[in-house]
Image (cartoon, rainbow, N blue to C red; front, side):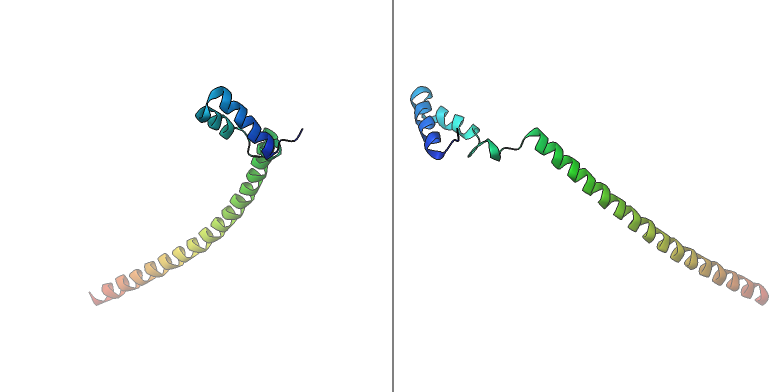
Length: 100
């Protein structure tokens, strides 16, 4: 038996007679809006959770790869900069030593 708006309205009217207007409105607000087909089941949530975990694993793997690549580039840049600085300081030290 499908529940339509007419049946919901009749149920609300009957609950209004038995429980009172405010309590009937509260009870009706707790029911699903149209039918149980619109309500997510635990199986739906588990499926969605599995799908999201899979997507996150893929995204994390991609970010990890980008991080390692960028870290390699930055490490090379830092090493070249440090080597250049050491050579420049050594050149200055040897130049200063010759002047003395």
